[in-house]
Length: 503
Image (tube, rainbow, N blue to C red; front, top):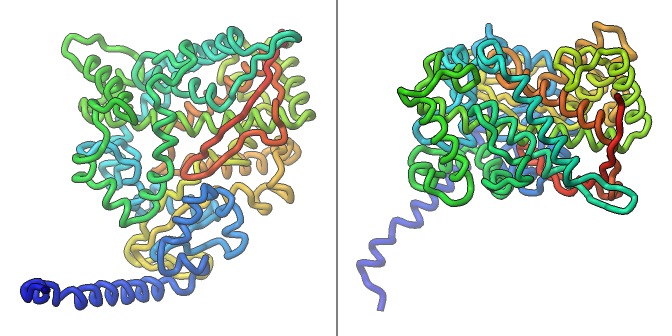
């Protein structure tokens, strides 16, 4: 027999469900109405189903490439979110003179419930204050060993390949390029951010399991970053305190967090020597220990996979294009024979090689290191863009996938990897094309602080690998399987490597 108390106790339930449903319908209509004049995928007008779909299927880049071509320069992708691919609009939104602020999208990927790295600070005043303390290190002004650190890790990469992955007529030793590129960027980041390499290249192993942990959590991290209600739950301080990674974890991000935090604590000890590296610069400019720990961990998570992704793409396209491969090798040979390329090549020297620069910019353009949308909030008063009024509080994001495939910006063949496009136009046009490519690093107040380091890594590693080795795709018909979330997850860039000598 049913209890009368039970019946009375649940009598409110239908009304509660009806109230929740009614609120959802009303809020959806209100959200639709305020941006009803902005075109976009139907599901994005009322919900985050479209964003969820392109993430769950690992096809963010594929969908974003054609999005603005189909709907126009301003596209609605969520109840309160629009994407733009106009570089002038993007620069305006990110200008230091403008009043746009970082949206809550930037809180995604948060691991520390108590302290935020610069990337995740949304308050402009706090952001600018912290950036002033970090910039001397990122630029190299207060950490003069940056180039030496990159040189050392390029040397370790070359040594690893020579020792384990050189194939000969009677000995086939395939190299998995996706894995090795990860090891290189992880060692660069550990050496730069913490003052000591972790030794992934020397061990030929990601013994902390960083790449595995990132790949396993990439889907949910992207969903939780792009979908507000999920972001508010998973990256909330309370959730992170209960379920976030800690130094006591034996897998995931925990082991890396423990090692990084321990090194920072040692460097902040009263008896520790002052060192002229990035960590020393952070300390000298007033970063508290906890702030430095948060910044160092973020550098690992954000700076390793993105640069490794571009390295892989450049190698793939250069190796798969014989005329590009030969022209790049010819430029390198001439630079070496004429004394314009040291061993290893310096960053300054590499920037004087026009075809190498074309290859690097084209690698960044053809597949950006991140498809993150980097939403900013429209200030009070709203904004009119391309004749469309954008209400205050709307989140405006960047569609770099579409921007970097624009015919108006890069010519009639933007889908083709062609470094010559930067060389066959006048200097002003070439410089403008390169500035448009660099939007992937952000602009103005919100520009990525690690941009100079990323270019230095690319300049050096591409030149030195092709100085010492020749590469061949082992399975060209299935070369490098990729899925795109906020960053790309690549597998099976299998290479046959032989030694060469351009000296």
